[in-house]
Amino acid sequence: MLKGISPLISPELLGVLARMGHGDEIVLADAHFPGASFNSRVLRADGLRIPDLLEAILPLFELDAYVPAPITMMAAVEGDKLDPEVELSYLAAIRKTNPDIAPIERIDRFDFYDKARGAFAVLMTGETAKYGNILLKKGVTPID
Image 1: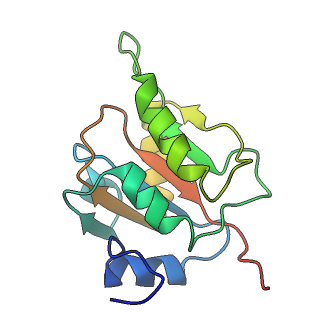
Image 2 (image 1 turned 60 degrees about the vertical axis):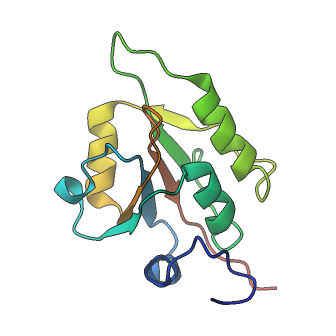
């Protein structure tokens, strides 16, 4: 354990977050996501919900301020409906450290899969919400 770092952040996740550069992306994947099919760097956070992980990660992680949408989620497949509470719970967690965050971008399922292939890492979570996957684009960490 380290002071000031959430116990939800595993040593492996902390290392990945530290190695990511600006413009790199990480997927926080729901429990149903085929992470290992899309990315060779897969971390586990079994049993943990994405809003809790967002609250733990975002104090350590600068979102990219130079892109229109530093946060991306999967759009519903035709015929499906999104549960608006999923995005609202994510935004509540995100706004604790990023109160002025741009709206979340929604992209087609297969486009999201392509982004997962190119992501720095995929974090498999215990999130069970349908369409619960979220991608974060890292920005430049400010030097105080």
